[in-house]
Length: 294
Image (tube, rainbow, N blue to C red; front, side, top):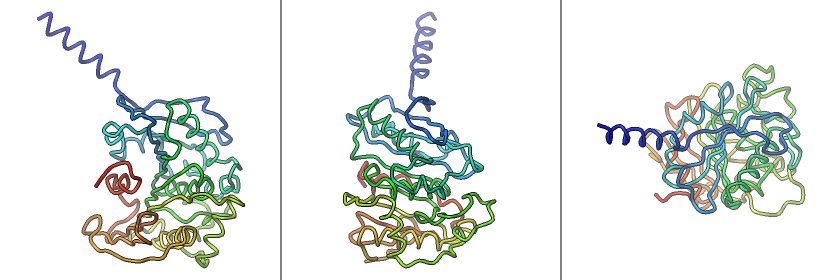
């Protein structure tokens, strides 16, 4: 009986010491007072990759942590997850803010980069394997991070977002602001003009550009599918790629995949009957990131 009790206590102690979502403060420059949470698996890879995961409008870091299977993949493959949180603009990211749309300008984007730098330093992370993903407003910020900080983010995955600088000049980026032309897909630019928004974010930069995946539902009434097409035009121009092939039934029967170039730098996915937000496909995303094999 005593032995069984001791075994039970030991098992409980082991569980209590297991990896969990932890709040972090004092991570560096934080101009918009963002929240930082981190998930560090018990079995951490040597020089671990880092994924920044960004919640939608009205959401929280904790909800986004519970909303995907990324923590279980982190447990299996040893990468670190950063869950950023904002409490401003109805918990929407400041994707309209010139500060976030400028390399080194601050804003929410600057605070998120501080989180990345803190994590790289504390856990000896691999600076060549930093990624971003998010849904809705988080997907928009994923595009912003890719545009403003290509030197930080190797790849990104945007689930139901909009192009970089689509909200530029607007009073806000929530569903309640008067100017909704961006999310309705009503802003018209040539691919070159969309690409120039990204290039102008970091003048003189000639390094690598962030690889991107764009996911969107074809019956999304909140952020119209045209927004995803604009993002694809933008990144195709930035990356110097053309749409080379479309494949139906990938990654599942409801979806069609748009491949740009050889597919290693830019992919689009559109789901029939899929609304807002397109479900996160961790397997497809992590394979594109290069963190797991097919």
